[in-house]
Each structure stands twice: as C-alpha cells, then as structure tokens.
Length: 234
Image (tube, rainbow, N blue to C red; front, side, top):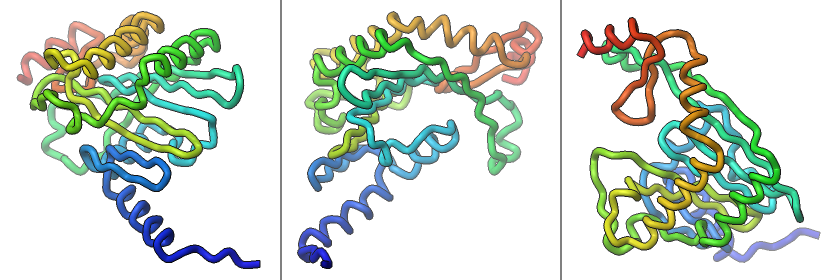
C-alpha cells in the first residue's frame, strides 16, 4: 500500500529542505521554519571541521550544544534518567602569514572531556528550568544590539520533532534585556560547574609550543618565545 502525501505537505517539506540548506540559525518545529541569522552552510562547516555529529540526525530525546568562544558544552538525554555530556575545547594554530595563502585549510585541534552524569543532569535541568531553548532568536528580541567586536554565543538544539540553531552577539553587553541575562547566567553556570577556564588553559598548555586562536581576534601563546614572535609580527 502506497502512502499518498498531500501536495501542500510535499511543498512544505521541499521548502524546509531548501531553507535548511541555506540558513544557520533556523527554527524547525512541526513543519514551521523561522529564519534568524547567519548562513546555515557556514555553521555546518564549523561542525564538520571540529568533527562533531550532525544534530539534525540525532534520535535522542533531547540534545543540545552551547557554544561560547572556542569551547562548547554538549548535553543529551537518551531517555528517562539518562544524562550524558562532554566539554569540547578547540582551536587552530596562529599563523601570521596566513593571509598569503587564504585557501590553505587550517588544522583544528580538539580535546573532548566527558561530563559526569550527575553534572550533566544538573546542566540539563538548569536549561529546562530557565526555558533556554524557548528564548527567541536574537533579531526577535527587543533591545538586543548587534556589534562587530565582542564575542558570540550559539545554541544548537535537537529533539525528535524540533531542531534549531540560534546565535546571540555578546549577551553580557546587552543592557536591560531579560533574555540576555538568562543566557549570561547560563553561561556563568556552565563555566563554574565545569571549570571551563581552567580546562581551556590546560588544553592550550598541552599543545605544541606556539600561539593559538581563542575564537576572536585575540590569540593565546603557551611559550614566551612564541609570544615575542607575535608581538614582533604585529
């Protein structure tokens, strides 16, 4: 027996596929897509470079990634009382002459650390408690200002019926924006709970001597000689 799909449903599916191929920040829930920011192809390329699973293929009850600078927290629940997670730090080596060869592919260096199930559950429940996944896209939040400096936070979310990626520019710079406060507080909670700063420093210290990207225009060096070379180059 062949299943007949109404033309309107088929058309909606086609539109969904086309939009997903073009956008980074999108909301997909029960067939509804809400365009938000940046290009989806760029975000997908970042995911692939770091070697991460495509969450659009996730079959977990709920799975999310909270990206900030060059670290991300990934938490998921495969079922009742099952919570897992990992903290991923990533970077690439700073090359002052990279502009001479713009087509050269950079090597991404990563470190994956498992998150204890009890801690993963705490982070998962905090996200649910503050309705993190229901915070609108940046351009739909009243009073949210966009800039060119600062940093960004990305939130990727997947469930069997919903997928979204949302981008927020410098939430801690936003004044009197309730949604920004929630994101900033969640960022601080994960940073403190997981000791993210210390783990980032240990990750950089364990790399070969040199200077590395931090996710913005700044670089960090793990040797005095490398630091001096960067200062001379600039």
